[in-house]
Image (tube, rainbow, N blue to C red; front, top):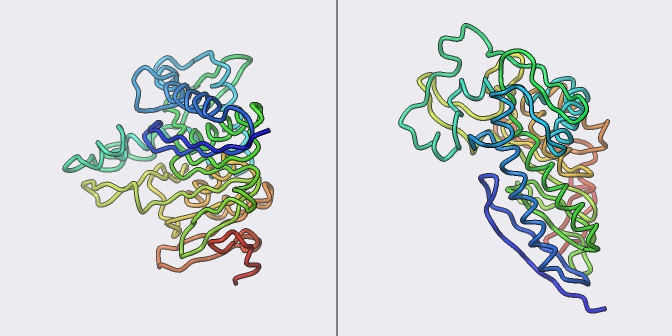
Length: 307
């Protein structure tokens, strides 16, 4: 059977996607279906589309959709396992901080509202409830899936490709990356910062950062990673976190959780057998034990311990 390769790039979920696959079969058709899956996810999970299922949930407090049930169940599991460091019910806090529309629009505004102006405290967080085939919100506040939706969708794309018999692929959804198989005869290579690259065979890597999605408010600069209890932009001391994990959902969630609440976020790494590379606000890098085993040279050769 002939082995071929194919690539596909497109924009969705307010970011660039790049898919690459190799192996037997009709890869172009598989990647077209993969793109369709991503475009199908966006009108479900986007906070910035008025007619999305997420927007409907925040307005009507209930939706019925199997994909929404699946992502909500996963979100609740991560809330529990990170002991609240990851919390998708901070939507009202994001809106109060000025992140009430797409980032490009927020950044272009002359001056966003002051974070939590006039609230007298943290905005409310609703209770997320899954019952059968429905997802509901109880109490005031809104849901935001920005800390899980891209990674979760990347994993669904990976599952689709594997079901279609694709043996080797690298999926990059705006920095949420999942790899399977090999790139030729070597692991897939992904740059992660400080001149380091990681080698992925069957695994994922994601990076969260407060350095890119920032905007000015009357109280100074704000960013998009919220500490749940305070309802304010995190001041944890970590500004960029890269996590290597078994799947993109886990890597995506943990990278955000560690910035939001380092103590609880870092404690969750062991449960998922994940590793992290962290950049502090002082410019210093910290490599958690185990991360070095993923490091590679640019040619894909594992380097062994670097630190």
